[in-house]
Length: 290
Image (tube, rainbow, N blue to C red; front, side, top):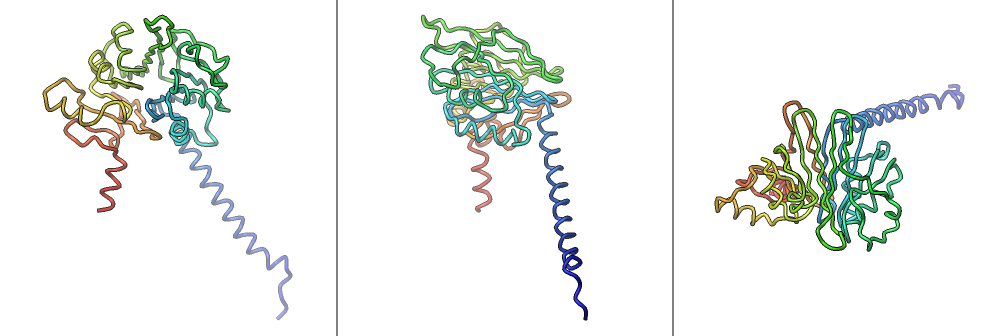
């Protein structure tokens, strides 16, 4: 038997390698399209950033990030779950906070693919994070159009002498649905009253104080803001409480999606006050281990 020339023997191997490469390329392209399609949906994505929430608004090709929180690592983890390496552009990064809560803001301001960076409120004079030096105050009220959604920003100075703590409010609207975001619960008293929203998001502390003023049926809050037992006690005692709670844990991502006729909530992060309010991932793990 005459052996085949070396080149002819290599052809099957080259064919297999080429097939594998094409299959990988097609699969990667499909994954990229899925990621891109997710980012094009009109959503308000809550990012656990330590003791506070950061907010990413996506609509069509537009992306707006409102960053605050004391844990830059958890903020980065959460943001990385949403913005994939090939689709990590941020059209506008808005930063806010004081003291330790500026740590997540500094990460957002230094993001290499942030096209524009501004602050929702003037920084306190004590702020010395290099990434925030020279970041301009956007000036409010300000209306920003993102695809089919509208974001209205407002900021109000504190009554203290230094004006070190500013409150802010963001209203995200699409069609007849609205999500209202407050910097803290106390911020609800700093702004003119508005029509009730479908969802109230309190990015910082004292969410029940904010809900008492802006009583939306759904309240989203950082995990550390209110002990679950306190909410349960309030409901048991007959105190006014939201019908639905969305708790956001550090490093986690909770999308609120605008859909026809309302806002879709992720069931795994949502509970009524008649249900357990622990970490849904922890509950899933416990169930799996039984």
